[in-house]
Image (cartoon, rainbow, N blue to C red; front, side, top):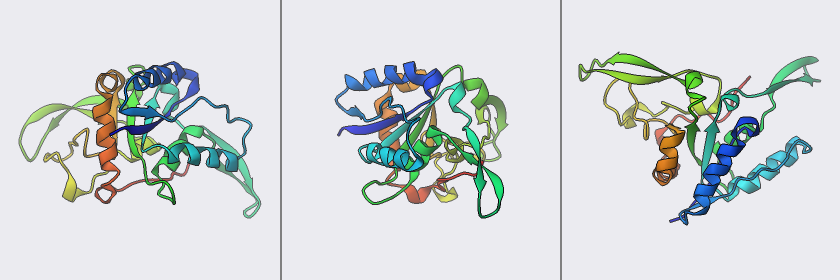
Amino acid sequence: MARNVFISFRYSDGHLLKDELASLFDVNVDTVDYSEDEDRSYMSDTSIRNFLYRKLRRSSVTIMLLTPQAIEYKTKRVFNPQTLRYDTVFDDWIYDEIRYSLEYRDGNATNGLVAVYTPEAKPFLITDQTHCCEVCRQVSTVSNVTARNNLIFRNMMNIKPDYKKHRCMGVFDRDWDSYCSLIPYDDFKDNFGHYIDIAFEKRSELYKYNLCKRLQP
């Protein structure tokens, strides 16, 4: 069964990688890419929302391409006439693409979500540490994800305890214990159908996860 995907990326350092993924999808009949490189700088917030709704309605899995410049969301200061103060708000298409992907609304169910990180982004995302499990008593090296105010990270390791696949405390299965899996770019390229299928399956098991759909700057 074909999977319809939407690629979210930062144009400044991710457009060539996005094109590489899209070219892989183009020659694979099981994956259809519904993302595009459209300039939205001239659009109002409402126009951007409606544009993204139309694109995401045709997709079932959102792929977040994590490059160094895509990790942090851009913000701006906006005057609030009710409080007579300036508020800080997100002003970032990536944030909009991910939060709209996670919404459940008429005509569009919540998308599956997978984050694909580049080698250049890894130092900003992951550190390795030694873990001694209190359950199995095994010592192993595990990847520790750096906490950030980002919808990708807020939807990692968010499995509810009753459904946790990895039996060791403090260790999470990469594929199933996060609604948003974090996958190296080369691993994803080599087996993208596998990771897309997993993300697609999890969208029908939302009850297992504590989803975070919005953030405050």
